[in-house]
Length: 112
Image: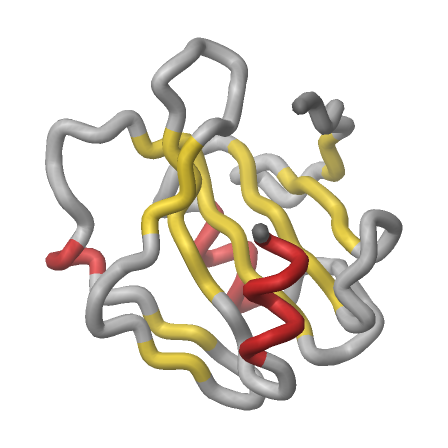
């Protein structure tokens, strides 16, 4: 779903919030009303994030082929959870990376 959403939003950035019902497993994507997608940014309206959900991080796309965080990304990461995904063009299983809130690359397993 994340790959498809990123491709459908191209060339604008896709953005969402990652949530979990199970410790250590990303199992929900929250699409936040009022999110603004642009060519080089996505602005999430934090006031619209529902309370009571275990927020563990974020996901956003890069219309470029580089899944590496910018300075703005790192500032965003530090505000919201511990796991942040960047999905880069062409939005395939090999074009994404996971990052910690400190900007360190993480290894995540994809499970069905």
